[in-house]
Image 1 (cartoon, rainbow, N blue to C red):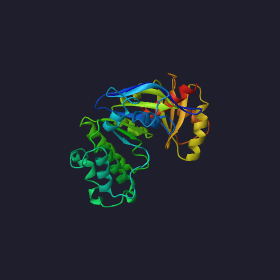
Image 2 (cartoon, one colour):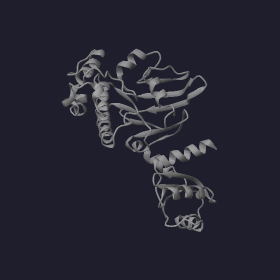
Image 3 (cartoon, rainbow, N blue to C red):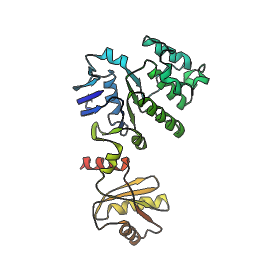
Image 4 (tube, one colour):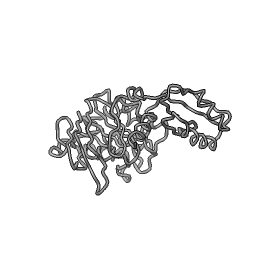
Length: 306
């Protein structure tokens, strides 16, 4: 459904995209995963015909994003990262406006948005600018679906939204995927990557990896250990000490624990604990753990920097 081939895009001296290539199948939920400034938004804007690539090409269902931009705009639903509906129109007025823009009616495609819109319908006469963050996202999703698009492109739709609304939003996307809509969604939240069929890990305008979340985590080559300590100050001390330990590949602070990668067969949890104990660190717990997508991402970033 979506093909991207060797796309480059620069803003002055800044290279936002560097030879990006990927494919998204029909009905797939595909994630662009990476931090702010990685190039996710630039790629999405090219796909929805808002930006021109400097090099390469992209197609949606065989239609070129440059030559066939008018046709593509009719078949794509786009939800930008910033809330961009009309704040001085009501919920119902915004929905009616977007249906009319595409030459349709709310009634004709209400079945597509029913499960989403029913949650905000009690507030249909409220101004969009007065909605909560979660309700704004649901309204924006409804407006991007009301013309029955074949492709839905969502730029960080859950950023700044509470945990409950994030969960509800991803449940909605999963339901839409089962209706045959192809979805591309970007997010800086690594935990959301596991909710996609496949993901592309983005960093500095390049793709580090493309695969299923399961395959990406299984690609982690070394052993990973989680080190838990008592205090924040102790955690900072242990990060510095672990970076000096021979055989350690990487050390990153993850929440209340430290993730340590080792490619040395003789290293294990007990040897790490004894090393830290010898450095005066007490009450330390060390366990071998399974790698997350964030662990793989951090490892790939470190390898790229070498």
